[in-house]
Length: 90
Image 1 (cartoon, rainbow, N blue to C red):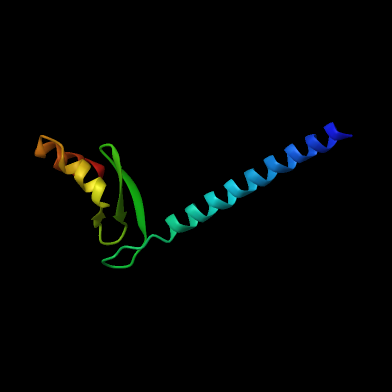
Image 2 (cartoon, rainbow, N blue to C red):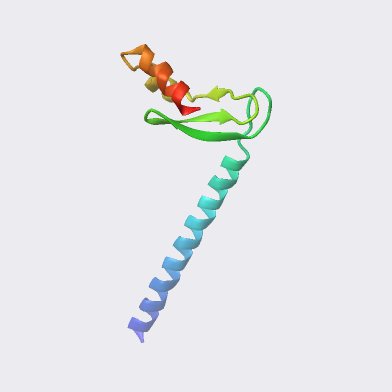
């Protein structure tokens, strides 16, 4: 009897954990979909530049960085490469 209870406890625990992960992922996706441009309030999209993700407005084409992302991009020793990465990304 004890093994049966333990088995079902484990199955239920896995289902609960999976459900929590699914809900967390859904909240993250909803937050991403609601990301609005601080300039024109249009929808923004994440884009990959170099080795980091940046937020790009689909309407005004503005590119917005978090502080650490900007530091990572500007730390490139060759500044021409920095601008090439941005230009080639769009």
